[in-house]
Image 1 (cartoon, rainbow, N blue to C red):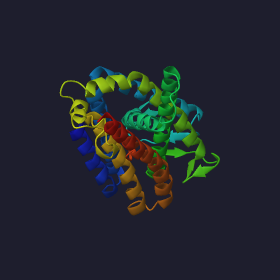
Image 2: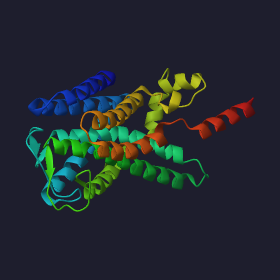
Image 3: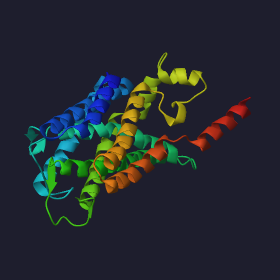
Image 4: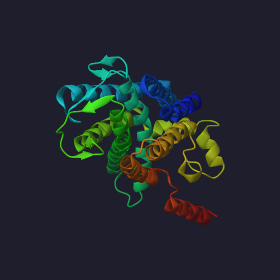
Length: 298
């Protein structure tokens, strides 16, 4: 299910630049549904269906609440309103929008945790302080990932009139008020923090390390909990990573080659690229440390 849904997502997004009007709006909605299905089912592989369902409900609920408050009050994103192209609405928000918060919130959590683990390399403070610090970095990095994604998303959706901003919204980046990025960071931190609480790392490790599980097979080959080039060994996490990297690469390419928005490609490319670089690229220091430990063990 996760891989099939991911393949459908990629196929729909490839077709997006080739469509227009109502057809493009339909492709947008169906790609969100497919991406949502891929993310939630991948999370179910790692954490189990019950936790995945609870996480989807939490991320979607927080996203819906934030958007509903936003369209009626202008806080925390700024003054904006939705059009009619994205389908039925709930509290002034298209129903598909909370699905979008969930579909990217789950990959953002995974990347946030990888960034937190990468940064946790110096010193060994008390265990409780260390765990608190990692949770804080996870939420911050996950929120930053969602914010970086929106640097691609908002200009694209505004260009299609799926939503619009009121004039006089203050400083802007690529036509989008900077207040929107601040709002996304705030809500993204809350979403990622809630997901981290509902999807504990220990639960993921236990799932992956079960009898014959992916982590067990990886350890049997001398590895840890990741495959080559920093790719997670757990198949559920692998799907999330593929979707995240695809979103990054396709967004940069589409804005450069199809939409003529190099400023969007630059802003989103730099912001999300830094986070992906921190969380995905091979950790040479960690690899060297593990190699030294292995040699000393011999």
